[in-house]
Image (cartoon, rainbow, N blue to C red; front, side, top):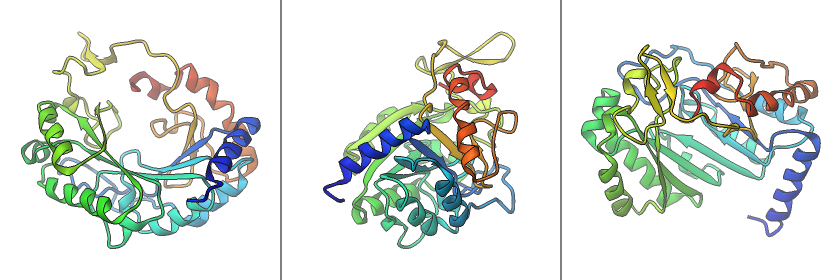
Length: 289
């Protein structure tokens, strides 16, 4: 990393602020997934973002993003056959690059992708609860992937335990894994409700039986947030999905404004989305903790 990196970071952040462009871009490399959950219904031909499409969007922007984060909506970046090309393109156009994944399906040499941060999201901390949630036992594979990246990558590695109904009793097991596997960067979060979810976001998987879960179930069998939250946790980001469409965030769909044309006007129009996000006025905001 260059000694000039902090200065470049600050300059890009300032330019984004002046131009009114969010400082970060979340990119979905593929609409496919590597999890293989038995109850998940994904397309047989998932869309895959091309590096040329990402490059067009980034070149059209009035300001280069400070951060680019590869993640998914109901998908995983490791499912993309073009992940190397996408990371190369992103690396040339941002100051910080990260990948969020479930850690399944890592291909040879991918642990050496030019990223600054790997985020591994595991839904369980024991084989039993993993199998209950996913319908398969690939817990060991996920652990091996994390170990491989820890050993062979210079990037920061963070492990996130996402708590679901079937893994709500895995907190102590996760703490033991932290010590055993030397996960220096780690945290626990509760699974997010997503009525459009293919598997994990469904109501039956939410950890409503834990007192710290952000949701409660009303008498009308409707899930609502316990607290009336203000602002948007992703206010500083936009989302580019695998089909090349720019959206306010990973959780909004076609019911919200979006743009399919990689041109400066699209980025300028996206400025208007920020106020709606801050007011939490999109349908998806109703379930965003």
